[in-house]
Image (tube, rainbow, N blue to C red; front, side):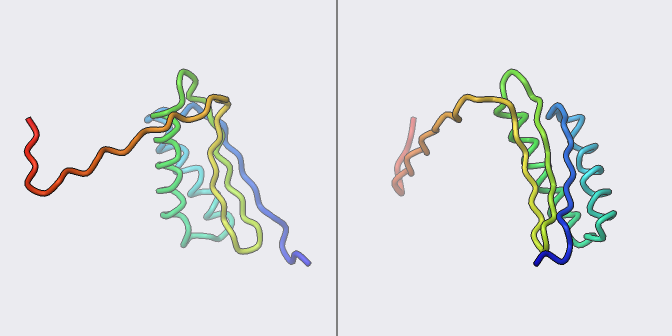
Length: 103
C-alpha cells in the first residue's frame, strides 16, 4: 500500500544556456516545497548536466521537457526531447603507448 501519493512536476523549455539557471531555480523551489532540501544541490546539478546535453546534442530544435517525480522515497529527474533520430556512436580514441611520440 502506498502511504503517500507520488508528486510530479513538469517544465517545458528551450534548452538554452540562459534558461538553465531558471530551471535550476524552479527545481530547487519545487524540492523545497516538497521538504526535500537535502536533494536540492544534487538535483540542480543533474538538471544542469541534462540540459547541457540537450543543448549540445539536440539539433535544430532545443525544446525539451524536464520532469521531476517523487514516488515514495525515490526522486527521479528526466529530460526528454522530441527528436526521433538515434544518437551517433563515437569511437573512443585509442590509448597511446608509453613513450610514443605523435607528430
